[in-house]
Length: 353
Image (cartoon, rainbow, N blue to C red; front, side, top):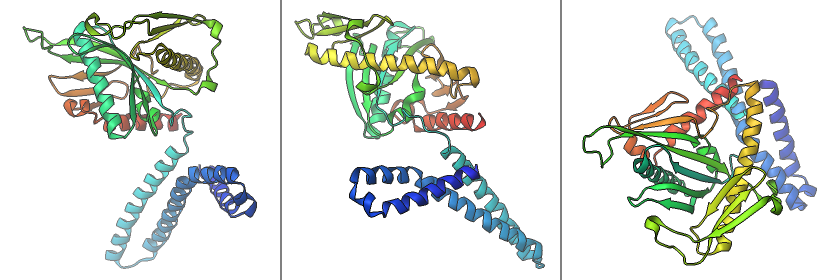
């Protein structure tokens, strides 16, 4: 680890010298590129230098405690040594996390799909609650949420809802949310007070740049139809809704929430690109999985990842055995503690190989 950190520090000093070079300063594009690389490794270098300083101080204190004859002073130095050893271990762990290669998608925006699974209207209502939960979380982080397509039920739930979230580090925070979310509670319509179990599936798709996914127009079948909302009310009296089928993969996407056929088609194409990218990534992950266990589950939408138990106000993530007893708080968008636990587990797994 230290050999690699020495190389990073050497590169950091080299970049500092380059930023003072008159030729680099006169080339703004080159200057920005070097400044960004320097900024990307600055925290690692600062942490590494602090780690080494603590290590030097620790060695000095160990020498002192051996030479000190005064028992009271020796005990004091020994307590200082214990504190420094703790700090050194903390800085080492921090450095190990920093050296884990970053997911290239972490800074990208996402498209989320939430669909009611088993449980009928109760599943649809919970799909709506998850949609609101992610929306509130996005609002707290000043991310932009845009509704793309939805199929509402009469009671205010959603059979399905598709939306995008744009902002800094969106995918890095929400990438572990794909999978089956299970809810256990007494439905308002249940007279006997029995607890029902329903499921909702969540998909988190990276929104790719157009250049990342090239689609041959000849591979598409595009159908238009009349948009409709909850209760069969027509949103639009023209054929503005769009359904696109990608023939080679048989992936079907539809969008109907915009009044313009052109806008619905554009959004449907963005969803299709995201789904094709996801398919590529799943294929790559399967290859990686042959070599080592995936970091946090498979991300497969058929995998049960979490249970929301309303009678006990309990939320449990089954992938990491993590439980919270503040379900109402979580559904208000306070999900950082849960996401932090998932990210930490993922990093620890990556360190262990």
